[in-house]
Length: 311
View 1 (tube, rainbow, N blue to C red):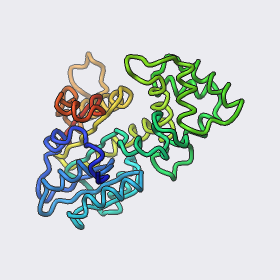
View 2 (view 1 turned 30 degrees about the horizontal axis):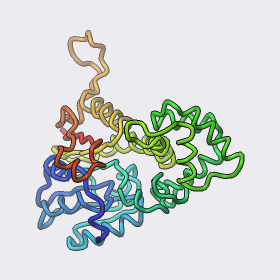
View 3 (view 1 turned 180 degrees about the horizontal axis):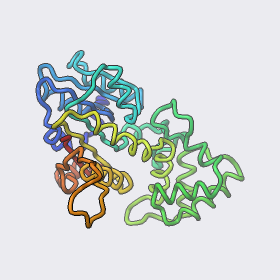
View 4 (view 1 turned 180 degrees about the vertical axis):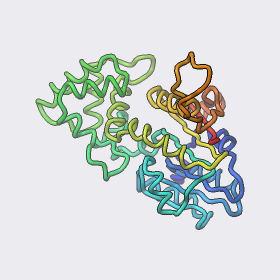
C-alpha cells in the first residue's frame, strides 16, 4: 500500500466544513502530517488558493510533498514546529490568513515505524522525538533524570496514578543497565503498574507522558494559540483537534479567554478594563467523530475539534 494512504486524517469532512476554504484564500496547516487535510483544503480553494504546510518531521514533509505535488506552487512546505508559525509566515511575506489548522495527534506513521520509538508494541530505540533535531530523547529522560522528576512527568502528563511506583521501578532497572528500547521500558512499566486496564496497555499513559515531555508539546500549544489567533484575518478560523484531556483543557481555556478577556469584577455594571474579544467560539461543544469514522479508524475515537472565528 502506498504510504500516503496509510494514515487516515481525523474529522476530515468536519475540518473542511469549519475552515470553509474559498478560492483565493490563504491557509496554514501547521501540523501537515501526510497532507490529508491540506489536500481537501487545496481542492476547495481552486484555482488560486494557497496553503502553507508545516511539520517537525522531515520524513512526513516528504510524504506530504508527494501527495500535494499536483497543486504545484500553491503549497509551500516548512520543517518547523507549529509554535514558529509567525516566523514562517514572515518568511512568506504573509501578514494574515483565512484559516489555520492544528491537528495535535501523532501520525500513525510514528507508531508504525519502530525506529521512532513511539510504540510499546514495536520494539525500537527509546527516542520519541518528533524531530531528530530535538535535544532530549525519551532515552535521556528514562536513564538520566532523577526518580522524582520522572514520577512528576508521568503523573502530570500521563495522568498516571501509579507514577511513583513506575518511576521507582525504572530507577531500579536502570541501576542494573541502561534502558535502551521501547520494549524494555514497556515491560518495566507493566511490571510496576500491573496488567491491562479495560483493554488499555499499562504502559500507554507513561509513553504518552514521555512523548509530551520530549517534545514539550503542552508549552508549545500554549504559545501557538495566541500567535495563531493574531494571524487570522477578520472572519478567519482556527481549528484545533486535540486527543487527550490535557490538550483539550488548554485549548478550551485559552479560547474562553480570547472570547471573553474582560477582567472587571462581576458586580461592575459595565466593562472598564477595555479588553475586547478577539474571537467568537463557533463550536460551543467539541465536535467528535461519529460511529462510522471510529469503526474505520479506531484511533480517532478520542479526537475533539474546537473552532473559533476572528472578529
